[in-house]
Length: 305
Picture 1 (tube, one colour):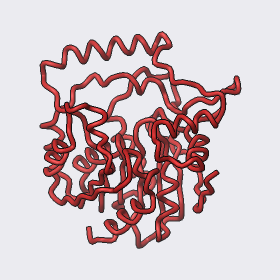
Picture 2 (tube, helix red, strand yellow):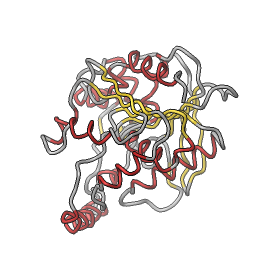
Picture 3 (spheres, helix red, strand yellow):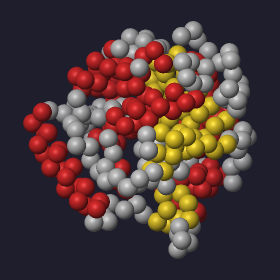
């Protein structure tokens, strides 16, 4: 099994009626900004371990488990759907706790990259640098889609309340590892075995459950407003590094309804943009090529904000 080179510690922070689990590496520094790593959908903060191990310099690193993922717990009744603005408000509260008035370097993957991009335009004064890893946003929608989207959202909530959309359980950690490797054929066995024990945990029956809330599978009630997203992108003042993998994730997911070329066109709205491509990597680029990604991130973060 993979052996972590840099040890992390778990902290729990009260945030908006949640006990937020945060994985922390290193110690605070007066001279270097905190480095905040935010994960994607159906992932956890520990997923950044391979990149953290590949960094050449010691940093104070903060990686939360988003609400409804990992070990972050809701201190109240369960929810039946999740709202995108809540992630931004959670991040805002976490930065209040860890950074205070200090600026941070923010790295986000996939859903976390989308959150980071939106947050950077809403709170531009809080960031020194931003790295967006495959955070593409969503296909453009039309107002005419709104009625059907609201109906779909209500129908799917009923399905969750009836116990539908449940996440699959596995006979053991080995089964979870095989699932991770099936999704990502580039993931090595040792890393899959390690990730499985971060991504899932045994239940009372001895099976292993994914550490994610099935309500995350409910479609958003809101259509994706591209005009709104672009206006937020234009207000980002920090330098941004957009990193994509050589495998075309968008082409695989959206089958032509949203393309990499369209993403590259919309991200040009960011005033201070750099771009990079990581070769021999798929969407889980932080698992596939952690050393190359760590080098890209460190080189970018060492540039003047």
